Image 1 (tube, one colour):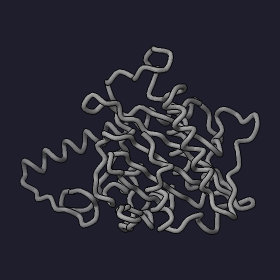
Image 2 (tube, helix red, strand yellow; image 1 turned 90 degrees about the vertical axis):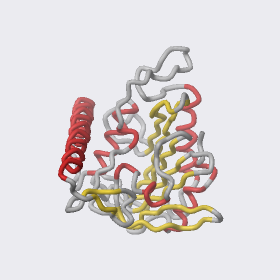
Image 3 (cartoon, one colour; image 1 turned 90 degrees about the horizontal axis):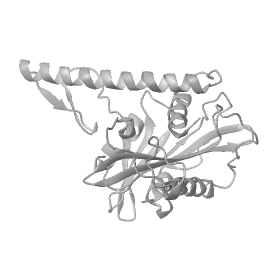
Image 4 (spheres, helix red, strand yellow; image 1 turned 45 degrees about the horizontal axis):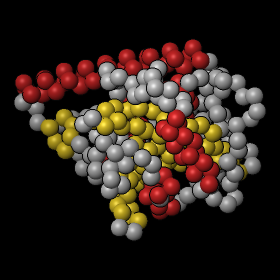
Length: 281
């Protein structure tokens, strides 16, 4: 299972409401292709709907706290995750001097940054919890307890924009949840307003509060809406444009018993989003 497949599998695995069947590489690839088709269909439908509204003169109203505008009437706004966007931009050059085969870095400084991010996640696991390592000889198509990935996102104004995503299972006895950090380098098109930024994380929505950490304003979703892959997450844009998301969930998503208590309070989660250890470039 390569990096892109792992990213899709992690999101799909955590979205399941019942223990999913064992993943195969072919199944994950198929799911990724179907998801891409659905995303394109949603974008096409959204464009058609906008055209109809313009012709018929239907008013658009802002939804308080939604971080954007929606047509008047029912239906939540769907926000695709930034990393889901297709691109015709050539892949960056790898450490061997040749273009990468896909979005994922498998060697070099970007790859090393993702490993560093995972190490930092493990280092902040609080007392009373453990971060179990991946078992020896783990099957390639099995969801890992620890994972990391560096992925090329886009080229903006001549500069490469990358994202790093690393996650670690956190355990109390037999119970397991997950911590995940995703960092987007400067140049991303993510919004500035704290709660609008928080609601861009994997397109998930929820009740958001702006929390203060020193002089920083951090958007923290304290309660998810219908999508409960994570229970809480924080989002912060650093002054240099780097964006950090920190998420915690009480369930691992593979059928194991979930944690009774989340590792961090919402204020602690906000502080982690500002923490320089998760400020990668």
